[in-house]
Amino acid sequence: MAIIDPVLLRLWGRLTALAEATPQLLRLNARQAPSLSRTFNRVLDGVAAERSNLWVADWLTAVHEHSSWLQRDGIHATTRGSRGRARLVAATAHAAFVGGIPAAPPAGCSISTMPLKVRTRGSDSLCLELRLHQLRYQHDTPDERFGSTTRDALIAWQALHGLAATGVLDTVARAALGLAPPD
Image (cartoon, rainbow, N blue to C red; front, top):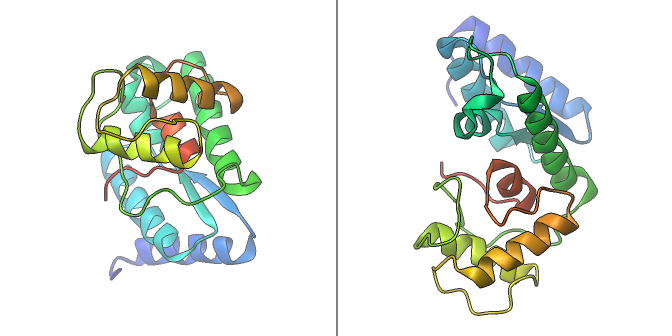
């Protein structure tokens, strides 16, 4: 990543130094003033791409999906948002540090549709089904249809991993499953 701005260069250096000095590092991406957030998140994503020990909890997507998680200023979390952020961090940390995911997700698997729920069809559903099948929660052959079997498998996985057993894939569950949003 080419960085010309001296502020970005310092931020890049600090994040890289922190990642080098820490065995495992988890960082939330930012939800602040739009230009500041874009800058910080771009640098954070760049460092994370180069460092296998840096995990990013996707707070930006989570608050986009749950507008009640932010106060009117669009930056500070409500009580509900603080709980959601804690679940997101816990799920990401579990996946990163505890090794809650026994194997890497299928190659090239990413999920863009959020939340993902029953009656969703297509590659996002297939990716979720492949992951649940890989983890031995879904026994049917993956078929690109998020039906009751996929929902039941997701509920079982969520319940066992301390998440709200809703049968709906949100950003917290996506992070815990090790599934990435598209690049």
